[in-house]
Length: 116
Image 1 (cartoon, rainbow, N blue to C red):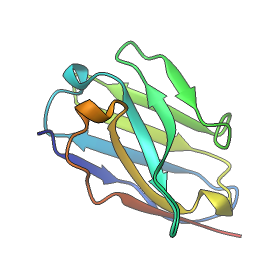
Image 2: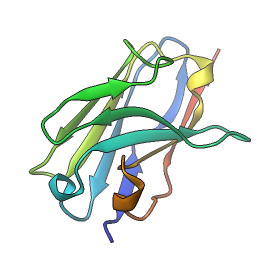
Image 3: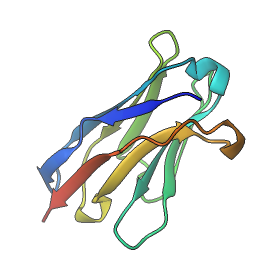
């Protein structure tokens, strides 16, 4: 099973930016569509951005226009550029396959905290 390690989170003021990175131990091309998920305390884990192997992207309405997902199939990495951050973006962010049947092992995630 592919292992996933997220990094790049931190504490930032509202309006700031962060760039998250996800490193996979195996081929993300074989996995297929990849996504970034986030989970705030007391909430379910939500999918906020997805990208297919060919680079087609989709976003949740809450992050559209502010977040950009990208992938490097050769380096087995998935990135999430987050701009114009809001306090409601505060959560632990994870990456994984979009299809549950292709999920790798969930990593520890990376904490993003946005102060007002």
